[in-house]
Image (cartoon, rainbow, N blue to C red; front, top):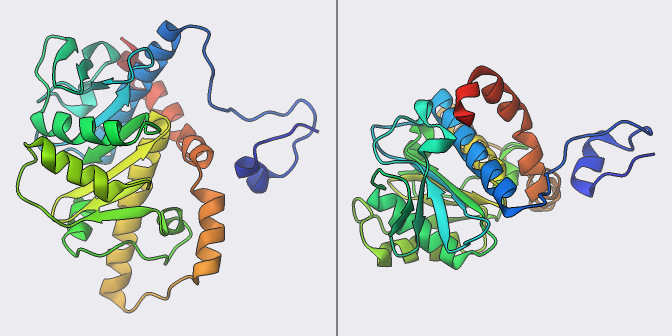
Amino acid sequence: MSTLPPALAAAVGPLPEGVTLPLPPTFETVEEERRYRKEQLAAGFRLFGRFGFSEGVAGHITVRDPENPDAFWVNPFGMSFSQIKASDLILVDHEGTVLSGNRPVNRAAFVIHSQVHAARPDAVAAAHSHSLHGKAFSSLGIPLAPITQDACAFFEDHGIYDDYRGVVNELDEGKRVAKALAGHKAVILKNHGLLTVGQSVAEAVWWFVTMERSCQAQLLAMAAGTPQLIDRETALVTRGQVGTHLAGWFQARPLWDQITASDPDLFD
């Protein structure tokens, strides 16, 4: 029998010999890993475009450079998510200096993501946009409730930043956002939207997609009546099943397969 990490073994059980499931890749060179991260990032933007997460020029996803962890790759300011290619990405350090690329970087992207990456060395990637249900839910100033299996991924594992002061332009506010995120996988930015992090682009993007949908589900449930909560013990068990780093990476696989098949130019 083939062995699997616990996060996947619980879902599929033991595999017969010769049957495999994809797992996060390893790399022999930093160049290979950089190319992979940039391609994953471009695919993440295409997915955000496909899901309708764009709102003018707002929104950004970042990934650390594997050679220089104090620098991260990000989308060029003002470019459509649906058109971003790996070659369009900008490399910027934590001081805001553009190290690679010939287009400007969104100031808010630098201010927020530089502080998140600085405060969380484990956060390889971070994702934020002004998605419809995320920003609607954020106006309530409440956490996601454990009312569905999917929402349990965030049970006692997301923060709330409740000090909105307009468009984020100052590093101090980026530091406060990072503090509200703390050690969690996500933070709800009150009156603003959602931000998620992960040990890979795939994980950060998946948490954003499923958190956005969980916000939508809770808004619908609250509009219809009083949602019934999953008890704490069960919610924690469920989080251990669907809320791990590997679970986040693996649940994004169908999305990557779809977007790379439909948008092969993202690899350019």
